Image (cartoon, rainbow, N blue to C red):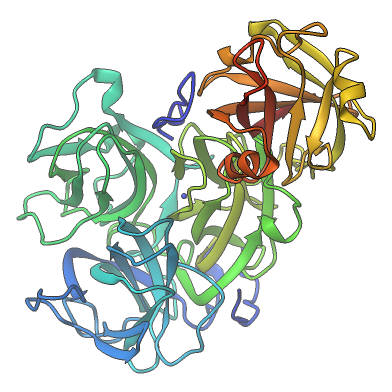
Length: 565
């Protein structure tokens, strides 16, 4: 199952512009028959994690970079820390430490212009957050990291790609049909990692062969303390590197990792600095020397290129339970087995998860991103199997979605047999009623230039706003509490975490989660102070307070979290 969503409310749930690349010629379905491969085609070489660079003040043990400008560093990678001297691309784990503000980090080939893409997102100051990144190496043998805000960066290398001009056995990606498969969920066994514990994760049950040289996994940590998790090969010392970082107690975070598998092993080790539960989903593995000789699964790195951004064509974020398909034919060709992406979620409606999978194929029981709070921006590297219609991304609770391609893997895509998912684009509608059955509120909304005429008739009246719902809008509705039917007499029972609904003229029910309850002076200025902290789409219900008095106003503010037909 995907990471679970809580029954209610604001706390943790287990739940993440373009350079032009040349068109890649279509390959035969089986790579063995190919006379040649696209320029840049490469095979993967697994490495034990090694720290390449660390910009934190006072930490001079690993420097490994030069300053390009105030926000950009250059990190040499070819011939460094085991990276082959002819490497075409590198896989690194990037960690942002103590950013000065919300922002992003972009990894790209050294010597190229900064692309409109991101590799790591931070949603507020002081974070410690990491993400895997696949980066094509510049002609000078280096990569560059640009940060939009002041931040310290840590760079750990976990693998590289080396050029291959013909079919090969080793270093090819093989993915699981249908998408990622769950290998471990310690919540099912009620056996979390202890503080400082190292444990082995077995991969045999999900089909990873004994000849694999590395495995591609998504790690989700939850219910632990502030600290880091490190995935590393069996039989070796724990490296000075991290795969996943938590910077709040009980936090839930996802991170993809590519972990080397020593010969004959089908498992790897995970160290938890402060303990907690762990979920492991397997997306695929890289072949060894005993595998078939073919070009299928070889990698074509590209400069970062944006292929999906729902902010460009959705007025508000897609609703929950929405699947969006994208990417077929551009920038990667139709004969693509899988794609390396950075997937990001922003402006979520509610906590939940995001799953990337082949388009037109049943969604797997795994997740790529976990959203645990409102207004979060979260990203995760994802190696995703492709369908003949491209890729699909599903949002459980609704969020804007962004995807940037770092490269693709040659081979036959999975057949997209299911009907194409149609993502609905919301249209604003007029609010006609307010409903909170749990507290006995069911009231129509009336309109009149004199609001007293409306509320004295036993309805709720629009005090401030336009009265439109289904878009980023703030609306305040007033009604009586102790007279004229007292239709808002019980709104004090709408406490934080409860819900109420607004009925639209389109016949739909728009659900709002109560995020605050305030007692304020009866002025528009005081009410707007409350509304502006509620989120992008809010409704505030207002009535006199205390009952029988007009001295104050009771204001209950709810944030839009979903819609029902």
